[in-house]
Image (cartoon, rainbow, N blue to C red):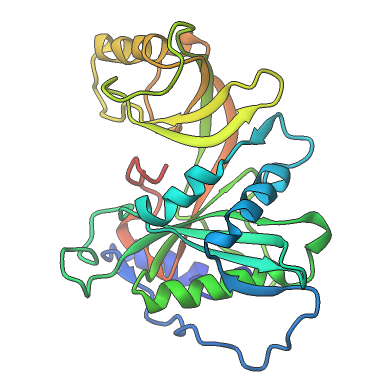
Length: 298
């Protein structure tokens, strides 16, 4: 089972038809430590610490992207260390008996995808997370490490009150023969070449919201970044052109990606990229099912 906090299709569809508000999935069992699971002699699953940083970086840069991908992961130890503070990241790793990291997955704190009453300022309010960087070294796949890391992540995040998670899946949708998982939102990404050769690095003050993929194009070495686009229906053509111009003037040479919900000028060379699916774990979108989530999510 991919994730024990997933909600069935019937529940999701029923909540949408009844126009219910976004809510936690109270029918999902509270995660517990599975004392019946035998210790695997090939790996152990642990909450990551600073000693795992270099191992995680090596794993992700070597195996996060498929071997035939045109992109290559390019995370750094400095960035990964910063996630523990900047994103309140929780990393789970699978280590072999010699301490080598063979698998990892993370939960980054994030904003709620839709308006709701689950958040707030009180310390008891429910926190939101996004599951990212799920990776298992090829020779260690199909041994249970992935499932055990997800279960550990579910347990740890639940204990710290991060009980609502979003999982993004690029490419093919999630599917299990026992219980298919229904995405609450899906779209296609679009991309184009952008940037100014005279700009050498990403910088603040450009008026653009940039989300780093920490990935580069293999052939050119150009970084891949997601840009928060324009989603307001009725936006004037001049505003769209100004935004498009900023992509070419304010950024270093790069590939920019936007959500299918964003408005672009098709004459600027935008190409259709891969589909992306967003899944809800331990929460039910209700009336928001199928709606465009907050731009911080996708």
